[in-house]
Image 1 (cartoon, rainbow, N blue to C red):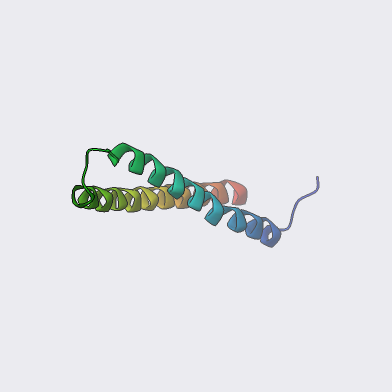
Image 2 (image 1 turned 120 degrees about the vertical axis):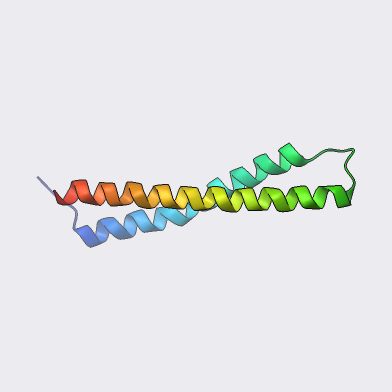
Length: 81
């Protein structure tokens, strides 16, 4: 069977990763901003909510990063065995 060299495979995976993270982050930010936006809110009431949303997004992105690393390691392990 035809196998792709390991180094070519890796670069392909890495180039996809950042874009996917960016899309995910954007989706999360949009979701949060819709959740927290309220027409009756004043600009000053809005700020802490926005900061809270940002913190939640950062935590979420961190979780995604960790789970992606775990998945990647598991994939590598299966490929090597």
